[in-house]
Length: 146
Image (cartoon, rainbow, N blue to C red; front, side):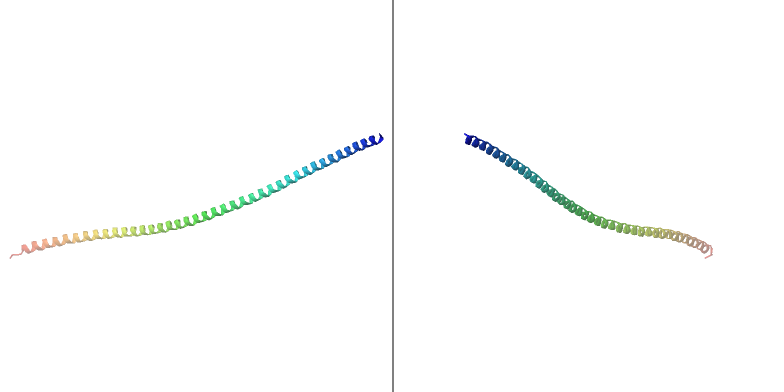
């Protein structure tokens, strides 16, 4: 019977050791699972950070490209505006020059009209004087006995 007690005791001790081993193995597996989960979380976090950085870089590149395109369009519009302004300035100078020419011609015409009026008045006066002389000469000639 001693052998049975010894066997039973050995069996209990074996079961206890086996349970302790299973418990230790379970704890080890749980610890490994936790470590694996933490590693997966850390990897996912690193991957998320990397992806976030890549997307930020892409967004910065897009912003830079859009800004560059907008600056080019703005510069093209500025050049176009400058050309339009130069054309407008040139036309304004031409209009001013033509207005000066018209104004000078108007003044010349006024001077010419004034001189013409003066000459007409002079000719009219001379014509009157000639008519008076003719009339006077005609009276003198008529007063001579024939």
